[in-house]
Length: 236
View 1 (tube, rainbow, N blue to C red):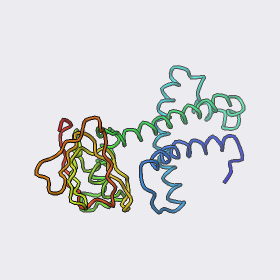
View 2: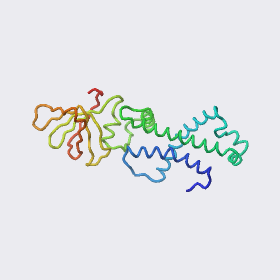
View 3: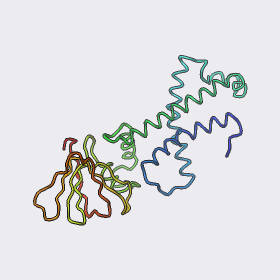
């Protein structure tokens, strides 16, 4: 479907751009999963409506300071949509652009809050409360997320870091803070440990501390036998 008028184009932009931006950002941090075109389009429109509502609220505030710069619903009702468009087309375009920019900015901030590397952001907490309300308990939860993401990130308490002990197939044991991981359940995924890192070599009686200038250790998933996880204070 191609918009045939400028008004339809503006409406199309408002209903697509913020949600599409949010979905594109989310796809960078999650695994693809099967969905129909209708499901994808519905999610984009739903997110756009949510973000546009914030944008409309901001524009409503601006209208109190500069009434002539934005669309006036009262004038549209009095003159009619067509007549108002001909007389105030710049205000219509400016209003649509403002709503779209604000909505897109809110979409970016929401994505950032959902994926904050150190703490649970406001959007993450709001999403968790909403999901808990819908499922009425953890027993009904069905996750699309890989196991590593669920254990390393989703279940991590606020203000804590994930401490990992990795037992490799060669018998060595590596302990450190989680520095990163491949968000996948495939065998070719990797696990990254960051300092402080200790390793017990096979048949060794004491742990060996890695030099501090060795910042990260990458352990291929195919070499891992077991992974033990605990949540620790950041100073661990």
